Length: 144
Image 1 (cartoon, rainbow, N blue to C red):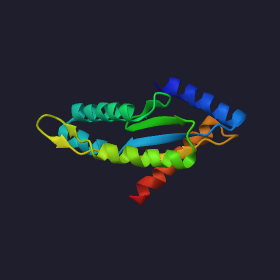
Image 2: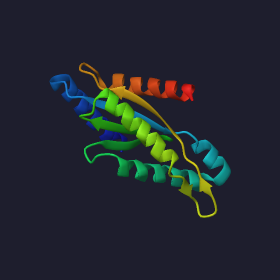
Image 3: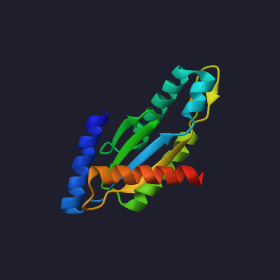
Image 4: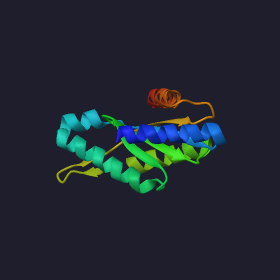
C-alpha cells in the first residue's frame, strides 16, 4: 500500500544519503485507462490495473518495491540501481506492457504506459524524489 511504499522510499533515500547507495524511483502511469473505462466499463479498467500490476511484479526483482500510488499510477523503487540502469528498466517495462494486451474475453485491449524516472541522490528528501519523478513523468507524456 501507499503508506508502506512511502516508508520504504524513506529508508532508501536515507541509505542513499548515508552510504551513497544508488537507487531510483519510477512513476508508472497506465496511459489509456480512461479510454478503457469509457469503452469497456470500470470493471475492465480495474482488470487493466490488475493486469499491469501482475505484469510489473513478474518483471522486477524481489528486492524492488511496487505499489499503486494513485488511480492510474504505480510507484516502483529500484534499490541498488544506477540512473542508466533505471532508464533501461523503464524502457523495458514500457515495451513489456505494450506487448502484453489485456484479454477481456470478448475483446483484446492494448495497454500503454508512460514512466518518469528519478534517481535518488544523496541529500534527497522523499518529497524531492517524488516531485522529480512526477516532473519527469509529465515530460515523458509531453514527448509522446
